[in-house]
Each structure stands twice: as structure tokens, then as C-alpha cells.
Image (cartoon, rainbow, N blue to C red; front, side, top):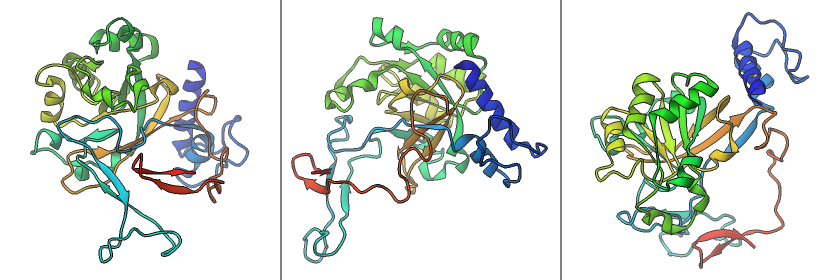
Length: 313
């Protein structure tokens, strides 16, 4: 598999080079040397890649720090009548979200979350959109010590086996903590996997990564959250509440990053998608499922007052 990942990355690099006049032998039949600019990268690599969602679904019942309190979802209503819009009467429905915090679910924390002199979520550059993805597993260590924090030695071991972490990469720390999601009790845990301050400093100061991410809702379990404090006050962002890191390769994949652009926002409801080679075991490729038009469902969305969200029934 490692060989296939290396070959896939080499294919992307080859496609970007304008000096190449013909597609590689194993490129899809519809890929042509005449595709303009980065369309060729898409045709030859990204179109057949495997896409894996690394994001939790947002509901009112997901884990959240008690200091923020609960959020509430409701059917959007006409402000003049107070009655919710319905498919039967108005021909559409919408949802009103009463969110207690922007630190909710899978997140992207801008440094302004702790340090107002640094960028807020709307001030992050568009270059965050697509990056090399590195996944460092501490699952074995966490099995022995539920409060284990990533160490510099773990990073160095990863590099001995897989090569140097690319500059500008996103490094996700896999602990499998998210396997317990969406149990709200997760937010009450005082012992959980984290990332040590030394590891954070190594990743940013020695490897110059874009940002790191982890599955729990906090960076570490120190009394003053020393890792998060250091990150934010140095102008670094981070990802929290990430899911499905067991379904992407530890090297050789990319990550797509999306989040709403709230002015002055101090947290982001983020969407992370891993993009792995077409030979990867998990994920879905373009064309494997209906996309446009999207498929009709035998069950319709209906408001569920018990769960506070729309479900299919």
C-alpha cells in the first residue's frame, strides 16, 4: 500500500508539471494531456480518488463542554405568524439553529479563540483549503494509558517508518477516542488522549506544519490547557473533534478543509474530508454514487420533536 501511495503522489506532481505532454500509462482513459491547468490533476488523480468524511454530524445531543450549555434546533418559522414553514403550505422548510457556541462538534479553532491579536475564523487564508494529510496513531499507547499524550518520540518514530512530515501539512493525531461519539458523557471526561506541548512545538517549529488536529474536544489535560494556550498565542490554528481517522492512510492522502466564514468568529463548524488514492480500502470515488441529480429517498424528512432534528420516516 505504501508503494501505491507514493505512486499516487508522484502522479499528481507529474500532472501539475506543464512540461508533461502525455498522461501516465495508468491514468483514466478520459484524462488528456490537453486538459487546461489543474483540470488535469483532477482528471488523472482526484476524480478516481477515495473520499472519506472526517466530520461528526451536528445534533443538539452531541458532546459539548458544560460551560457552553446546550444548543437547540427548531423548524424555522414565519416571524409574523410564529408558524413553521411547511412543504405542504409554502413548498419549503428551513431550520433555525440556536447554537450556544462556535466550539461545537468537529471544529477549526483560529488563534483568536484565545488571542484576539491574531486572526479570527473569517480571517484565515483561502490557502487552508487543501493540504497533505499526516495521521499519527497513538491508539496502542492509549489502550494502555487512556490519558496518553502524543510525544516527540512518537513523531520521530512515524518519520523513521514513513519519511519526513511535509512542510505545510495537516497532522491529525489518531486515538480512536471518537469511537464513543456522540455520547454526551464524553464531554465530562477528565482523562482523555491529548497532544503534549513538546510535540506541538516540534511539529510547528521543526516541521512547520499548517495545523494539527485531534479527536477529543481539548488539546490536553493540563490544568491551564498549556498546549492550546501556546498554539493560539503563537498564531496557530488547530482542529478538534475529528472523526474516522482509522479510515485514512497515515501518509499519502490529502485533506480538504471547509468552514463557515463568521465575521470575528472564534471557532469554526468545520468539514474535513480525507482524499486518498483510488486503491485505498475506504471511501467513495466520484461516480460511484449518484451526485447530480441526487437520489430520491423512499422516506421523507420529518421533524422529530424527540431528537430535535429532522429524520427520515
